[in-house]
Length: 331
Image (cartoon, rainbow, N blue to C red; front, top):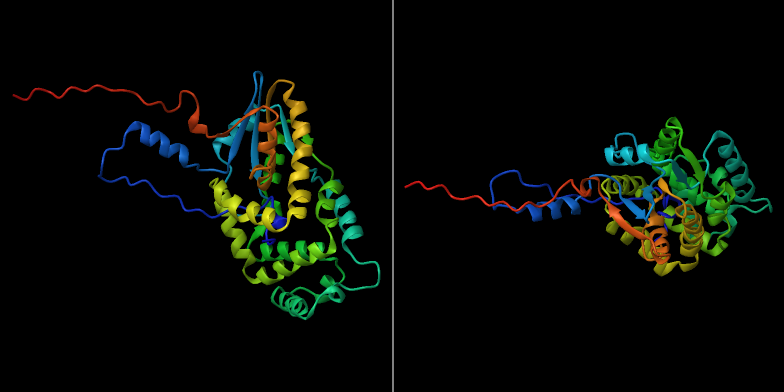
Protein backbone atom coordinates (compact mmCIF):
# COMPACT_ATOMS: atom_id res chain seq x y z
CA UNK A 1 0.00 0.00 0.00
CA UNK A 2 2.71 2.52 0.95
CA UNK A 3 5.67 1.32 -1.07
CA UNK A 4 5.35 4.07 -3.69
CA UNK A 5 4.61 6.91 -1.28
CA UNK A 6 7.98 8.58 -1.56
CA UNK A 7 8.04 7.98 -5.29
CA UNK A 8 4.52 9.23 -5.78
CA UNK A 9 5.86 11.54 -8.45
CA UNK A 10 8.18 8.85 -9.76
CA UNK A 11 5.79 5.99 -10.05
CA UNK A 12 4.17 4.60 -13.14
CA UNK A 13 2.78 1.32 -14.30
CA UNK A 14 3.95 -1.30 -16.74
CA UNK A 15 1.38 -1.88 -19.35
CA UNK A 16 1.92 -3.81 -22.55
CA UNK A 17 0.21 -2.34 -25.54
CA UNK A 18 -1.30 -4.70 -28.00
CA UNK A 19 0.59 -4.34 -31.24
CA UNK A 20 -1.39 -3.77 -34.37
CA UNK A 21 -1.27 -6.70 -36.76
CA UNK A 22 0.17 -5.54 -40.03
CA UNK A 23 -0.71 -8.70 -41.90
CA UNK A 24 -3.81 -9.71 -43.71
CA UNK A 25 -7.10 -9.80 -41.89
CA UNK A 26 -10.50 -8.17 -41.67
CA UNK A 27 -10.78 -4.65 -43.05
CA UNK A 28 -10.69 -2.03 -40.26
CA UNK A 29 -12.76 1.08 -40.81
CA UNK A 30 -11.26 4.55 -40.56
CA UNK A 31 -13.43 5.20 -37.50
CA UNK A 32 -12.05 2.11 -35.77
CA UNK A 33 -8.49 3.05 -36.60
CA UNK A 34 -9.01 6.54 -35.20
CA UNK A 35 -10.54 5.07 -32.02
CA UNK A 36 -7.65 2.62 -31.67
CA UNK A 37 -5.11 5.39 -32.15
CA UNK A 38 -6.76 7.54 -29.51
CA UNK A 39 -6.78 4.65 -27.05
CA UNK A 40 -3.08 4.06 -27.59
CA UNK A 41 -0.83 6.79 -26.22
CA UNK A 42 2.84 6.40 -27.08
CA UNK A 43 4.12 8.77 -24.40
CA UNK A 44 3.40 9.88 -20.82
CA UNK A 45 -0.07 11.26 -20.22
CA UNK A 46 -0.85 14.90 -20.99
CA UNK A 47 -4.08 16.78 -20.24
CA UNK A 48 -5.27 20.05 -21.73
CA UNK A 49 -7.12 22.68 -19.68
CA UNK A 50 -8.70 25.50 -21.65
CA UNK A 51 -10.97 28.50 -21.54
CA UNK A 52 -11.74 31.16 -24.13
CA UNK A 53 -8.22 32.63 -24.27
CA UNK A 54 -5.79 30.28 -22.52
CA UNK A 55 -4.44 26.74 -22.65
CA UNK A 56 -2.78 24.91 -19.78
CA UNK A 57 -1.14 21.54 -20.44
CA UNK A 58 -0.75 19.18 -17.46
CA UNK A 59 2.09 16.67 -17.63
CA UNK A 60 2.65 14.03 -14.96
CA UNK A 61 6.31 13.49 -14.08
CA UNK A 62 8.29 10.93 -12.12
CA UNK A 63 11.50 11.59 -10.21
CA UNK A 64 13.46 8.41 -10.90
CA UNK A 65 14.13 7.01 -14.36
CA UNK A 66 16.40 4.45 -16.01
CA UNK A 67 18.90 5.77 -18.50
CA UNK A 68 17.52 3.87 -21.49
CA UNK A 69 13.88 4.99 -21.22
CA UNK A 70 12.71 7.02 -24.20
CA UNK A 71 9.86 9.16 -22.84
CA UNK A 72 10.28 12.71 -24.20
CA UNK A 73 8.10 12.74 -27.29
CA UNK A 74 7.57 15.38 -29.96
CA UNK A 75 4.09 16.28 -28.71
CA UNK A 76 5.50 17.47 -25.37
CA UNK A 77 8.42 19.20 -27.05
CA UNK A 78 6.02 21.09 -29.32
CA UNK A 79 3.80 22.15 -26.41
CA UNK A 80 6.79 23.33 -24.40
CA UNK A 81 8.08 25.30 -27.38
CA UNK A 82 4.79 27.18 -27.61
CA UNK A 83 4.43 27.84 -23.88
CA UNK A 84 5.37 31.10 -22.23
CA UNK A 85 5.28 29.82 -18.64
CA UNK A 86 6.16 26.44 -17.14
CA UNK A 87 5.13 25.40 -13.62
CA UNK A 88 7.04 22.84 -11.56
CA UNK A 89 6.46 21.49 -8.07
CA UNK A 90 9.60 22.85 -6.46
CA UNK A 91 12.92 24.52 -7.15
CA UNK A 92 15.78 22.01 -7.49
CA UNK A 93 18.63 24.42 -8.12
CA UNK A 94 21.92 23.91 -6.31
CA UNK A 95 20.91 26.30 -3.55
CA UNK A 96 17.50 24.65 -3.18
CA UNK A 97 19.15 21.23 -2.93
CA UNK A 98 21.39 22.48 -0.15
CA UNK A 99 18.37 23.91 1.65
CA UNK A 100 16.56 20.59 1.25
CA UNK A 101 19.52 18.66 2.62
CA UNK A 102 19.75 20.92 5.66
CA UNK A 103 16.01 20.80 6.35
CA UNK A 104 15.83 17.03 5.85
CA UNK A 105 18.62 16.63 8.38
CA UNK A 106 16.85 18.92 10.84
CA UNK A 107 13.51 17.13 10.49
CA UNK A 108 14.70 13.60 9.71
CA UNK A 109 17.48 12.77 12.19
CA UNK A 110 16.90 11.89 15.83
CA UNK A 111 18.02 14.49 18.37
CA UNK A 112 16.49 12.95 21.47
CA UNK A 113 19.18 10.35 22.07
CA UNK A 114 16.96 7.54 20.80
CA UNK A 115 17.59 5.32 17.79
CA UNK A 116 15.28 4.20 15.01
CA UNK A 117 15.53 0.66 16.40
CA UNK A 118 14.12 1.81 19.74
CA UNK A 119 10.68 2.25 18.15
CA UNK A 120 10.64 -1.06 16.26
CA UNK A 121 9.25 -4.43 17.30
CA UNK A 122 11.13 -7.72 16.79
CA UNK A 123 9.73 -8.27 13.30
CA UNK A 124 10.67 -4.76 12.21
CA UNK A 125 14.15 -5.13 13.72
CA UNK A 126 14.73 -8.28 11.67
CA UNK A 127 13.61 -6.44 8.55
CA UNK A 128 15.94 -3.54 9.34
CA UNK A 129 18.91 -5.89 9.69
CA UNK A 130 17.98 -7.65 6.46
CA UNK A 131 17.73 -4.51 4.34
CA UNK A 132 20.95 -3.12 5.79
CA UNK A 133 22.77 -6.33 4.82
CA UNK A 134 21.09 -6.80 1.44
CA UNK A 135 21.44 -3.18 0.46
CA UNK A 136 24.98 -2.79 1.80
CA UNK A 137 23.73 0.08 3.97
CA UNK A 138 25.47 0.99 7.23
CA UNK A 139 22.99 0.12 9.96
CA UNK A 140 24.22 3.03 12.06
CA UNK A 141 23.16 5.46 9.33
CA UNK A 142 19.61 4.12 9.26
CA UNK A 143 19.43 3.96 13.02
CA UNK A 144 20.01 7.70 13.29
CA UNK A 145 16.99 8.51 11.11
CA UNK A 146 13.33 9.03 11.86
CA UNK A 147 11.04 6.52 10.12
CA UNK A 148 9.99 8.82 7.25
CA UNK A 149 13.58 9.63 6.27
CA UNK A 150 14.65 5.98 6.59
CA UNK A 151 11.82 5.04 4.21
CA UNK A 152 12.94 7.62 1.67
CA UNK A 153 16.55 6.53 1.96
CA UNK A 154 15.71 2.87 1.43
CA UNK A 155 13.46 3.65 -1.53
CA UNK A 156 16.06 5.71 -3.33
CA UNK A 157 18.78 3.16 -2.52
CA UNK A 158 16.67 0.38 -4.07
CA UNK A 159 16.04 2.56 -7.10
CA UNK A 160 19.72 3.37 -7.59
CA UNK A 161 20.66 -0.29 -7.21
CA UNK A 162 18.23 -1.03 -10.05
CA UNK A 163 19.75 1.62 -12.30
CA UNK A 164 17.23 4.41 -11.76
CA UNK A 165 18.46 7.92 -11.06
CA UNK A 166 17.02 11.22 -9.87
CA UNK A 167 19.45 12.97 -12.21
CA UNK A 168 17.50 11.45 -15.11
CA UNK A 169 14.10 12.52 -13.78
CA UNK A 170 11.45 13.93 -16.08
CA UNK A 171 11.30 17.03 -13.88
CA UNK A 172 15.00 17.80 -14.33
CA UNK A 173 14.92 17.15 -18.08
CA UNK A 174 11.99 19.52 -18.56
CA UNK A 175 13.49 22.19 -16.31
CA UNK A 176 16.69 22.08 -18.32
CA UNK A 177 14.74 22.39 -21.56
CA UNK A 178 12.58 25.23 -20.21
CA UNK A 179 15.63 27.15 -19.03
CA UNK A 180 17.36 26.76 -22.40
CA UNK A 181 14.25 28.10 -24.07
CA UNK A 182 14.14 30.99 -21.56
CA UNK A 183 10.66 30.20 -20.29
CA UNK A 184 9.09 31.90 -17.31
CA UNK A 185 9.45 29.25 -14.58
CA UNK A 186 7.17 29.24 -11.52
CA UNK A 187 7.34 26.83 -8.57
CA UNK A 188 4.11 25.73 -6.93
CA UNK A 189 5.51 25.15 -3.44
CA UNK A 190 8.61 25.62 -1.32
CA UNK A 191 11.18 23.00 -0.40
CA UNK A 192 9.87 23.08 3.16
CA UNK A 193 6.27 22.53 2.03
CA UNK A 194 7.28 19.44 0.12
CA UNK A 195 9.42 17.92 2.86
CA UNK A 196 6.88 18.58 5.61
CA UNK A 197 4.14 16.81 3.65
CA UNK A 198 5.78 13.55 4.79
CA UNK A 199 7.96 14.64 7.71
CA UNK A 200 4.93 15.87 9.67
CA UNK A 201 2.98 12.61 9.34
CA UNK A 202 2.17 10.86 12.65
CA UNK A 203 4.97 8.57 13.83
CA UNK A 204 2.69 5.52 13.76
CA UNK A 205 1.95 6.13 10.10
CA UNK A 206 5.63 6.69 9.36
CA UNK A 207 6.38 3.29 10.90
CA UNK A 208 3.76 1.63 8.70
CA UNK A 209 5.40 3.15 5.64
CA UNK A 210 8.84 2.06 6.81
CA UNK A 211 7.67 -1.50 7.48
CA UNK A 212 6.21 -1.91 4.02
CA UNK A 213 9.28 -0.35 2.41
CA UNK A 214 11.52 -2.83 4.24
CA UNK A 215 9.27 -5.76 3.32
CA UNK A 216 9.43 -4.83 -0.36
CA UNK A 217 13.06 -3.71 -0.43
CA UNK A 218 14.51 -6.70 -2.31
CA UNK A 219 11.94 -6.35 -5.12
CA UNK A 220 11.42 -2.61 -5.03
CA UNK A 221 13.90 -1.77 -7.77
CA UNK A 222 12.23 -4.15 -10.21
CA UNK A 223 8.82 -2.75 -9.33
CA UNK A 224 10.01 0.81 -9.91
CA UNK A 225 11.42 -0.10 -13.31
CA UNK A 226 8.09 -1.60 -14.31
CA UNK A 227 6.33 1.51 -13.12
CA UNK A 228 8.66 3.78 -15.06
CA UNK A 229 8.03 1.81 -18.23
CA UNK A 230 4.29 2.03 -17.76
CA UNK A 231 4.41 5.75 -17.02
CA UNK A 232 6.30 6.23 -20.27
CA UNK A 233 3.31 4.94 -22.26
CA UNK A 234 0.62 6.83 -20.34
CA UNK A 235 -1.27 4.00 -18.64
CA UNK A 236 -3.21 6.09 -16.15
CA UNK A 237 -5.80 3.48 -15.12
CA UNK A 238 -3.11 1.13 -13.86
CA UNK A 239 -1.32 3.99 -12.11
CA UNK A 240 -4.50 4.92 -10.30
CA UNK A 241 -5.09 1.33 -9.20
CA UNK A 242 -1.55 0.94 -7.90
CA UNK A 243 -0.89 4.35 -6.36
CA UNK A 244 -4.10 6.17 -5.54
CA UNK A 245 -6.80 3.63 -4.69
CA UNK A 246 -4.92 1.75 -1.92
CA UNK A 247 -3.61 4.95 -0.34
CA UNK A 248 -7.04 6.54 -0.27
CA UNK A 249 -8.74 3.44 1.11
CA UNK A 250 -6.21 2.49 3.78
CA UNK A 251 -4.39 5.68 4.73
CA UNK A 252 -6.74 8.61 4.40
CA UNK A 253 -4.64 11.00 6.49
CA UNK A 254 -1.57 10.37 4.37
CA UNK A 255 -3.55 10.58 1.16
CA UNK A 256 -4.84 14.01 2.16
CA UNK A 257 -1.48 15.35 3.35
CA UNK A 258 0.62 14.12 0.44
CA UNK A 259 -1.88 14.63 -2.38
CA UNK A 260 -5.26 16.23 -1.76
CA UNK A 261 -4.20 19.27 0.27
CA UNK A 262 -1.40 20.09 -2.13
CA UNK A 263 -3.66 19.61 -5.16
CA UNK A 264 -6.17 22.10 -3.75
CA UNK A 265 -3.44 24.64 -3.08
CA UNK A 266 -1.93 24.28 -6.55
CA UNK A 267 -5.34 24.50 -8.22
CA UNK A 268 -5.89 27.93 -6.69
CA UNK A 269 -2.59 29.12 -8.16
CA UNK A 270 -3.39 27.71 -11.60
CA UNK A 271 -6.91 29.17 -11.60
CA UNK A 272 -5.43 32.63 -11.00
CA UNK A 273 -3.08 31.99 -13.91
CA UNK A 274 -5.95 30.90 -16.18
CA UNK A 275 -7.60 34.27 -15.63
CA UNK A 276 -4.93 35.57 -17.99
CA UNK A 277 -4.21 34.34 -21.50
CA UNK A 278 -1.65 32.31 -23.41
CA UNK A 279 -0.19 28.80 -23.34
CA UNK A 280 1.46 27.28 -20.26
CA UNK A 281 2.71 23.89 -19.09
CA UNK A 282 2.40 22.34 -15.62
CA UNK A 283 4.82 19.50 -14.83
CA UNK A 284 4.03 17.84 -11.49
CA UNK A 285 4.14 14.34 -10.04
CA UNK A 286 1.87 12.03 -11.97
CA UNK A 287 -0.07 10.98 -8.84
CA UNK A 288 -1.36 14.54 -8.51
CA UNK A 289 -3.20 14.09 -11.80
CA UNK A 290 -4.93 10.82 -10.93
CA UNK A 291 -8.08 9.95 -9.01
CA UNK A 292 -11.25 11.68 -7.90
CA UNK A 293 -9.50 14.39 -5.87
CA UNK A 294 -6.73 15.17 -8.31
CA UNK A 295 -5.55 18.51 -9.58
CA UNK A 296 -7.55 17.75 -12.71
CA UNK A 297 -10.71 17.17 -10.65
CA UNK A 298 -10.16 20.46 -8.81
CA UNK A 299 -9.88 22.37 -12.08
CA UNK A 300 -12.99 20.68 -13.48
CA UNK A 301 -14.90 21.58 -10.33
CA UNK A 302 -13.86 25.19 -10.86
CA UNK A 303 -15.57 25.09 -14.25
CA UNK A 304 -12.66 24.49 -16.60
CA UNK A 305 -12.74 22.04 -19.48
CA UNK A 306 -10.09 19.35 -19.04
CA UNK A 307 -9.43 16.57 -21.54
CA UNK A 308 -6.73 14.00 -22.19
CA UNK A 309 -4.49 15.35 -24.92
CA UNK A 310 -2.97 13.38 -27.77
CA UNK A 311 -0.85 14.99 -30.46
CA UNK A 312 -2.70 12.96 -33.11
CA UNK A 313 -6.09 14.17 -31.87
CA UNK A 314 -5.78 17.63 -33.36
CA UNK A 315 -8.79 18.98 -35.20
CA UNK A 316 -7.43 18.18 -38.65
CA UNK A 317 -5.02 15.36 -37.89
CA UNK A 318 -7.20 12.29 -38.37
CA UNK A 319 -10.73 12.62 -39.60
CA UNK A 320 -12.91 9.88 -41.07
CA UNK A 321 -13.64 10.40 -44.74
CA UNK A 322 -16.61 8.90 -46.53
CA UNK A 323 -15.46 7.39 -49.80
CA UNK A 324 -17.64 6.05 -52.57
CA UNK A 325 -15.81 3.65 -54.85
CA UNK A 326 -17.70 2.09 -57.69
CA UNK A 327 -16.86 -1.44 -58.76
CA UNK A 328 -15.58 -1.39 -62.35
CA UNK A 329 -17.66 -3.12 -64.98
CA UNK A 330 -15.61 -6.12 -66.07
CA UNK A 331 -18.12 -7.49 -68.58
